[in-house]
Length: 256
Image: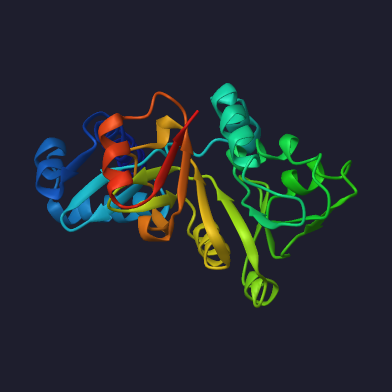
């Protein structure tokens, strides 16, 4: 077995172990795989840069990003729950509002329930979202521009700063790959996270659309800590202890 193959196999096994146990120390991983702590740190750095885990002081924490599936695959996952979440989110929107939708599949689930509203402005970096609103001419759609990210069918880049400057947004709806009390809403791609953080900063109210699978998971980087969240909408399989903890932080949790 060649060196590169052994390296790939070890990193694959590290992810598998983390998925089972949630988090492990560098020391634990070094002993388990019979390699030096320096080697483990190199492995964790590489996997962290790819968004497959989160590094904390002396530890590695699993994320839900193994691997990142395509938009179409993710859209089919938990589709019934996402539809209920999307419908509940749309009830918060009024005619004449300016809202932000990120490029997540859960934000995409809001769109069918917006099409009866008039004089609505939707700012989105999601190409799927924009195309889904083509048949709703009463809704103004604004795209920020930037570089195409194929995995999420989204636009990312620095152009969002100019577009969002001075815009007053009533509501922002954001999906996430992970949610914890400590890290808030997290996602796997650093460019996507930068885009989402810029959009969050422009919203009067920030609403996380996070199905129960994502609760307790941590992805590569935070785009909205809990103190920036006003509401979370989720499904009924959500862990009740975590719901209590988040409500204690003055975040409204709506279960549908």
